[in-house]
Length: 246
Image (cartoon, rainbow, N blue to C red; front, top):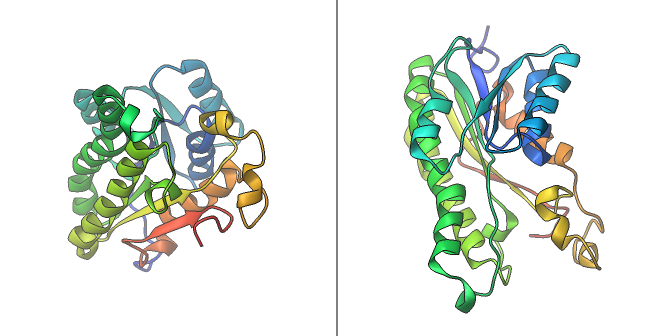
């Protein structure tokens, strides 16, 4: 088996995978034969539904409760178990606390940074040693077009996602020689519960594709980046935004 197609035994962890992009990603990775750790913070029912869908499709998955903003939870989520080490890590969990910069308080700033950026760092730091030992690893970080272009009212969110992009590039360069790739996916306006409060009105008219995206379209890109065939793709940010950032 060639370097581009070889894959050691291990599992995939998708943080925040009880709904939306995370749920679609968990289903996609399970379809590629990965045992998936379906992580949730509070939506156990949603996570159980994802696990059931994976089982119905012939895949395997387990429930993993944990808050990615808590350092102890991150360590537990990434710790090797009966399903092996985490060889695919999708840092998907995120929060928004929007407001114009003069109106943001310290808690709104810190909560978004801790959940979107610091958790990505901690999970990646915990997973990398096992990946490097296996000479195979895939880290896919969820960024956003808000980390690439201005989006008034989201200074905290934009800063966290721009940080994710910078972090992705640097770590990719650090571990590339060990068979580990680190990439980011930057969705635009995607139809999920996370964005339902901003989908009203004529926002789609600002998108060259003239429509919002689906979680499955984002998951398809993550699925590719997690595959052995993507072994020469690292340090990049793939925008999935219908041309919004073009």
